[in-house]
Image (cartoon, rainbow, N blue to C red; front, side, top):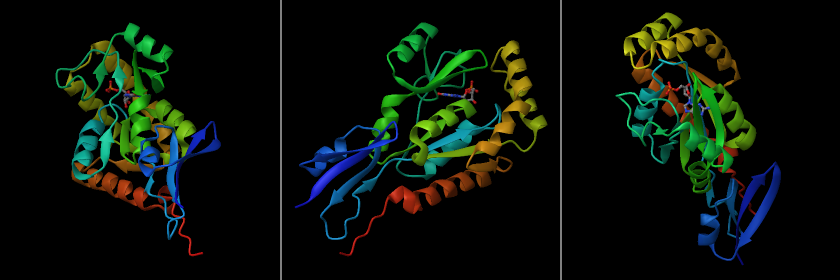
Length: 245
Ligand code: 5GP
């Protein structure tokens, strides 16, 4: 007799839930650690939980471009679309780059518990919607979150084993400063805040699992793709429990 179930991690207490049918176990929307099937010949889990790749970088490093190219090269990988109260730039698409909302709407989302993490960055609020992340995790779909160090810390503290943090480092501080000014997409006040923050921000790189320099774009993208592929091959990720008994 086969047993289908999920193991989820509520406040670090491992909870197991059994299901009569494999399809029900596959749909369970909990904060999933793994799905499993017991009683099959080799006792191998049916799938793995989706990983979260948390990518951070100082303003102007080109993280959105890198993420977009990575998404185009890796299957089973989606991007988390954050809520954002800042003014939309002319180059951004609402619902794709961010979901742009008012502060009131943002506050309502916080109150209703719809965000897994949020932070005030350069005078406006940004946050990661909880539900899509949970669904991706439970369906074995990997997610890229382009968020700053605060959010990465928070995701690590919640999901721990399934978060991989990648810091994109600009080739030099001067180059990103030039890019932020040349981009001319933000108010002069916001540009000044971004410039003033860069030196502080790069110090957080030491907390990350990986650091990739975005000097040559193609090489940077290829390195991030390699990290994602390697992380997917980890035994820890696959929760391989092959039984021969
Ligand atoms: P920007 O205004 O340049 O798009 O974003 C400013 C900073 O906010 C970037 O470092 C970006 O990664 C970060 N950010 C974007 N979305 C989120 C989010 O949902 N949560 C957190 N913590 N940071 C975010």
